Image (tube, rainbow, N blue to C red):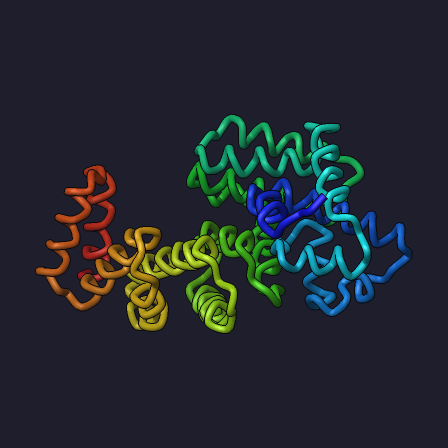
Length: 300
């Protein structure tokens, strides 16, 4: 059976559920072969990053997965079938709960996110990966209820530590960061945003999904800078937004970036033009009112 990169990419990019299941199966294959992580990785990536893949913290791209499977003589067709079986056997598995949590979060489904938090708490045996998932579920609940005070000081510190300790940013970690900005102070955020920009500028394989996640984080950061009347911190982040590809995938990000830039420069004509574009595109009056608040905050 011939397995293409596209076949594997479908499993990896489908959602976080695959990220966890693939990590579990890679670990099982490694232990079966009595290999250390540095031997299993075969020089394809750093051992520290591979460790995060096994623990379900970081994603592995399709090309690197194929290289690792080939280097260890692991049958790719059988490996993919094991992913399917692993998922079908247990719909209460770690990966299944992770996928449900992500879906419910993006659907703004508060009752089901609360249910997921309860079910994740019940996972036994408790592992570092399950503790991280519980932390993320609590963060998601805080975000969709706009109640960051529900997070304890210990939880907030754990989230900060998780991101400050990253040696490699991936789509998942950027998405978490983009939606957890309120738990940081502006100095911490400025440091992390600069680290993120450095990371993305040094990558050769940046896809549009990763770029969108980075752009989301940057625009959230810029908005916070406006809230705190600190526009001097926005120069490099807004340059990144301005230099995004001129494709439909980034139209909203570039327009919102231009709006923030116009607000900082007090350019009323550009502000009016961009607001008109948003209005014609059908954006709600409530959203347009929130955009007006950016200008209001800077004019205090």
